[in-house]
Amino acid sequence: MSVDLATVKRVARLARIAVSEEEAQRMTGELNGILGFVEQLSEVDVTGVEPMTSVTPMAMKKRVDAVTDGNKADDIVANAPNSERNFFLVPKVVE
Image (tube, rainbow, N blue to C red; front, side):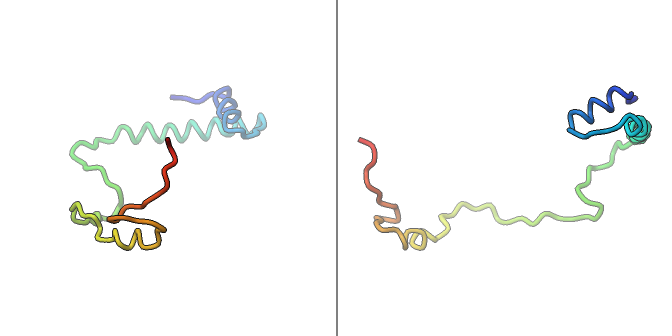
């Protein structure tokens, strides 16, 4: 893929960046160089290579996936004006 002057100006307008004619000409060459490098990367054979999230091997910290009530129901309703059996009591607002 190659970038022309019209594309650079359109992208600059969409990004709300003011570029002069001279800057647009320079950016055309720079963007074509970047896209050429990306095309070179797509030529690399990566079959059998696992995707990485970091350059150093890391293991995710995991916790036991157990369903509990947290044993904090009493603490949660402790400051409530009215509660009953660990539920908040509120006045009726809908008839």
